[in-house]
Image (tube, helix red, strand yellow):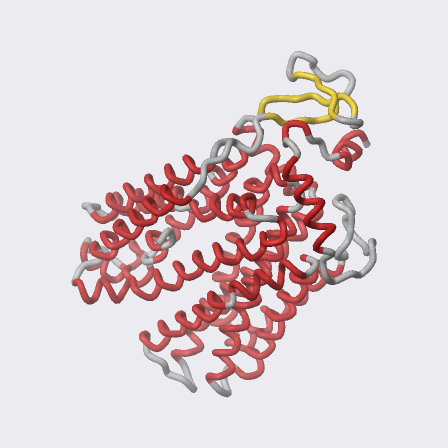
Length: 448
């Protein structure tokens, strides 16, 4: 339901051009404008989950999205439609607030399973929105009815979330750093935490959140490895789905637009694997889950390169394989990133999602360019190259490296979690007041 407003645009572009008596080139920029708004919302709004209470934030963003969707349904002109679409994109970040919140609420041994369930709902929304947008417009006779339907669905979502989402205090109001000599003592309060020693405590601000996002993006090896994998994964995924239309409309298939649209429904298979994926990730060392996901993706694009023009079964296998690999990779990678520090999950998630979003944009552009210039085999071959690069990134940093280890292998090669030890550690960390906890490794890194 939350995905509907921003994903029904593509099948409606022709209807919009006819309704507003404008050109196809004019309306073709609307999806880009909406995506730009979504990227801005992820960057500027979703990190607020680390600063303020998330229930009010979730309900506020969904309410704004609902009101803006009503505005789109009533839009009198293309400029108004574009402006409202941009603002709707900004506000359609509720899933990216919900996912870290669900992880915080879940018991440690079931966090990946819970994340998979939430993610499956997001993917199902994407599939349904793409499939029904054009159908509803054709049956009802107006593109506006698609948005009115979206208003109803978002209204139901708002009522559902108001009923079921619990309210919790904000995660932290203070940021703590080691008290270094020469630092302005008036800028922050000083306290002693355990056997760590004196630390300086400053009230967390919105600008401070944005600052730490950029800091983490450049200084946290786990996060850098994770968002690099996410970036490359989305290049492959977006390239495949964009070029699939070209592949199926040409020889030997000559599929119609309806036939191609039905291929999108194959993604439902990926949604149904969510419980399996989450259960698997909860048992495996997260690095192993990431490596397994990359292997599935690479095998899928190899099958695409060899068999895409031979039999449609190969294309179907690739669709299912990529969906499974991307979902497994997303759950494993985000779970690994969230382990960096529970107090920073919304910010860490924002960095990862922005990188993945950029991968989608680049994958769509690069995939189309290579396909139109050199054919589907060259496009699939490029995806194999990106998959190989992912393997290099993964193998450069082993499964049990310490937080600030950039390259190498250490801590053994255990592939299955020691559930009892992990649950004990995570429960201990979760029960500790974030305002009274400082990461010793972070302090050592700052002192050095």
